[in-house]
Picture (tube, rainbow, N blue to C red):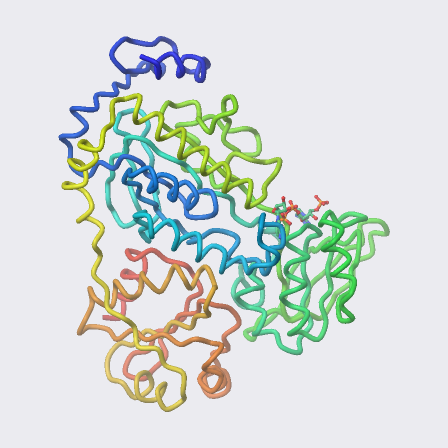
Length: 483
Ligand code: NDP
């Protein structure tokens, strides 16, 4: 009964009464924790982890080390926001490490201990019945004895005219992905936090000029980062500047309209790229019906554990932390959430034997079949496999370490398997395929300014392009219109 008492302390606001034998009450519903019954169901996982940033993967590592099956839904940004930064210098015991490399090692470490990571996103969560029910973008329904929410946050956008229109055509939030496309150009960075500073470090070596537009009278980035920003000769910082609109033509962004908030003077600046670094919004939309959020959308937690207001549902990282928002803190919280989830399961009576019983009915669901994509880098290869190839061809322009690309490649591999014989899907690393990019820009009028960029050709004729990050279902519908 220990867990019942703990829940009573932890969830007094929504628990209206507590019943004997393992249950909790939420308004008019009673949720029963009937483990022997749950063990007879299909597709039950002991711990579902939603999100694969530092919080999600650290939780996965600890769950795996406890010998419990954990399934991580990698979500729309596999390995999280750190993949979009450059070097991390404040990860304890590491002097300097690339964000993407750090996350690769964390993922590998979790997988080494047995964590299962799937390239799918949870789109619905029902915490009114137990095991809790999660539905994914790819249409799977998974039942979870416990859930760790580690969905992090998404970069904010400005909401000014032209931002949507030029998204992927000069407007972006990912300097790590897109910096090489702006060689010798003038770009602006909007924002004055650590992320803006990080974007400077990524862009300054490539571009002719970086202008950082800070809306207030000072930057809020750590002083050490600000000092480094100032050390670049091609970087200028303008304070009290607000961006009003983004304008351009078929070739992409050309001009931004900027207002000086002190003087009210509006000027037009010629620029080729707009990099946004204006903070983040917690990814809590999915939970707003189930769990209380604060006015900024962060999950409300109870006490010093990672317990949400629902027993067996834990949260870690930026989804519930508006204060510290550091990757190392998120990792620590992921570990705490894993320990909390482990205690929760053991207090329910979870044993290794039950874990094995569940495993039999579960893991096969996730053995997705894939077809490896041909990687093309020379113009000859482009002519052979795209321009002169009969039928439908999809070309995915990607870059290593670009989070959107990392997400799209497994989706396309899976689609290549499903639609074998109907479509040919190839990929091209933009860092290695300059002749192909120049041919697309100069001969086909198809400049690539952002990754991932996907082109569809039919019988050598260009049909459509997209920069959208799509699920397998969406991508299938997108290509099927040309089949
Ligand atoms: P922050 O919230 O710290 O900074 C956002 C910046 O954008 C602020 O300068 C803010 O201005 C500005 N801003 C917000 N909205 C607008 C708008 N509509 N128009 C113009 N400017 C706007 O976000 P970050 O993404 O930089 O950082 C988030 C967290 O991640 C922080 O805790 C940071 O420390 C951490 N981080 C750590 C890194 C590292 O350690 N290497 C790297 C990157 C991030 P104002 O100041 O006026 O509010």
